[in-house]
Length: 146
Image (cartoon, rainbow, N blue to C red):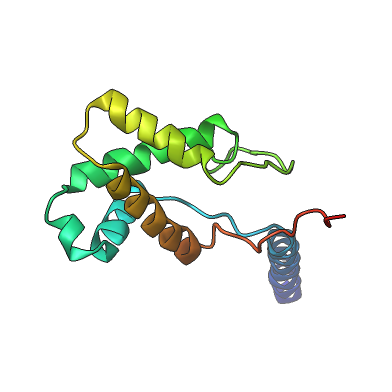
């Protein structure tokens, strides 16, 4: 009778070990998902902005600019509001100045008292946050020039 108990315990352990191994192996094959936390991003960016800029803008100004940028990325299909979404694997090419122009337009529409230089400084500092969370991959080389 005791050997049935031992056999059952060993069988349960083997099934659990195989299951954990399979799940761990499949997760190891997937790219790490970068999660953008707006509150964390606001704190991160605000802490790294130049002192002369933080003297004239508020955390809400930083939050608004970052939200406008998130909206742009979501509209382009680069980001998702939910971490479980499959945003696809297709390459999305965005001109360097397009996100900045979009955010500047939204800032103007919202009537925020921010200069273009303030917005650019916030967006440039946000890039440091993207690097910190692993959201920025290696730079792709363009086509060879003839």
